[in-house]
Length: 32
Image (cartoon, rainbow, N blue to C red; front, side):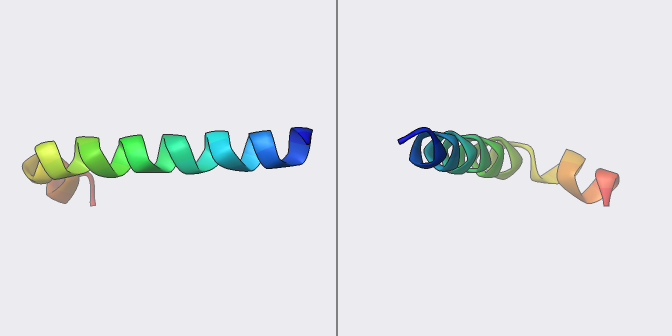
């Protein structure tokens, strides 16, 4: 269903953000 697809895309985007933040922990600290 479309709702499931949207949820999967959301989780996928969150996972990508986590990976990026792990690669750049210094910039993550600066942002916060």
